[in-house]
Length: 491
Image (tube, rainbow, N blue to C red):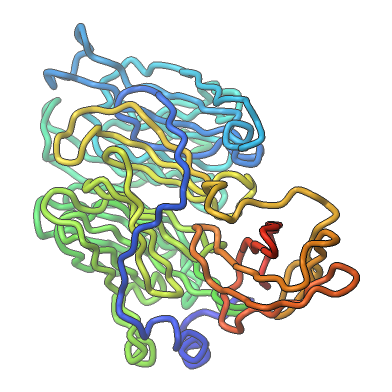
């Protein structure tokens, strides 16, 4: 059974006391290598097909309506779905193969009038929100398997078993209107193909999250309402009791929500709803069980903050967030042209510059593709210009940065995973005195070990820092200009 915050506050405070004591730092990360792929105009969403080791990705592109008349005229481009495959081989530095890029289909509608677009995937399905209906596709075969007749849909979320879909609806009085006359969640019964209920929401309803409250065991729906200015809300519907349980004010232009789970140590699991607030240039971490931004006093005393301030300004604020517990990092796109990598254990932000304006981002929850670090879309060419772009970017570690993985089976680390200490088996005549440098998966050096002694059997014993978090790491052994690089897991 997972131990939640209410049961482990003191333990969590002790374990994390080193993590949040330092001042927030902003640093560049120049150790990545980017691979850019051309797709349709204004790529808005990127996500893997699944089941193939993150080797194939789907990209939904909004297209372009140059005169904003809602009709595909000459020079316009329809909303489209693209697939980018052969990702593993294309990123492999030892391969000469390239990405395979294919347009799956045009949707025959102007997607740019459906902004912001929130694509949702569930198991084998992709849900595409169109002005008058929602299309359900099989991710693998690309066949349309259902048409959900709900107009004005902005986002869609299934319940735990997929029997019910919660569709965020902005109902317009006239086509082309920006502000809707009504906002609600359409509760769609999949078996009967009918809307069985409507949940009235706040203004400009957007993304939703279905989850189970660990304190009450009730089924809940968190609903992001963008609002018009400084009136964004996060609403919590108790689906078990059929009530709106709580509404919290979150500021200016809430843009994205994600349910993230942080597992810092064995037996401790913490859930947060990460709320990206574009206009206030921040990310809020809301406890989904208490439905509150208020922190336990012990955590507050440690310096942990429920608000992450970002250095963006004006209209170039944060957009979307993706989190990986394997590397304990959240990636946050922003219209200033950067992606911000937030290390939740170190309370540190690294700045990843891009060559345009990023929108959607994907970081693997479990790293099944050894080459891929993360992927993102560039919706605009230059920050602040809103000139449509057509690129997605796949990112790997630059092999020249000194953390590439060794592929010789004769050289390895044992045991692997490593708890505190391990033994590395290196080539004969590697050198008597060895230096080791350890890097995390984002390329940051986390430990240096000097003057390791090589045994007669070409073995080197090394110890890890006791405060090194669990995760995937690379170690570079160097002696007399000889280098061997290996990967290990810290347990």
